[in-house]
Length: 260
Image (tube, rainbow, N blue to C red; front, side, top):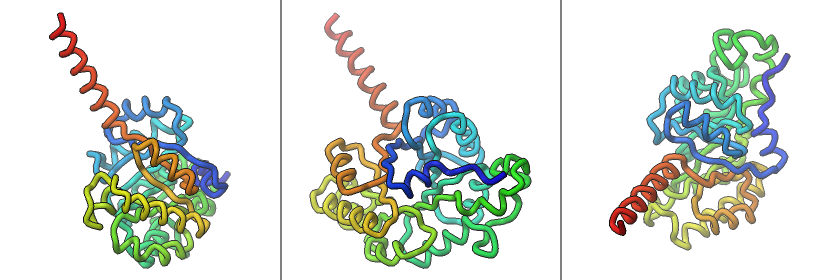
């Protein structure tokens, strides 16, 4: 019995578009709701949301019952953190601020078992192996891990060609807000110059045979990115959906009160 098939990775390799949403409320119940929405994938954010290993693990467990594939973004590429979330059953990882091919190669090693990597062999304790119920987990786990690296700085952009040459990197996600700031623009990533840079990067990633990814809330830019063969695209953030929905509701209530 092998490791579970990573459908997110399988679809990326096939070039099938995957539409997703950021999950940043750091709560299992909220994640469960997101899992009913119909997205192809959901990203549990461990970089900017108040998540830790336990909250990530809880949300992964809840979302395993949904039709949405799970991606986890860690705060950095620390090998110990990677080991822990992989053991928690995560099969797709997004690592921020990757700026060199060497850094990408170290991440590949972190998600693979020896002799091809340095992932700790403790899967018998872990959800990843269904607590030792998957006898062939060690032999099959590596091929089901999807490693996505995030390029979001001038240094990362300059090294994009080298990063794309690293075997074991399955996709490259362009972080438009951080990239925009690093290049001297506003963090909104609305500048035409930034959008042109992002689209050019997506073209490079797609041409390399790896999957390009992006998060944008702009419907017009979503269409542009898809036209440039972006494969995994996040179109919303649950925190903003809740915050903006509540603000709109409060404003409508105030307007009604003033008219009464």
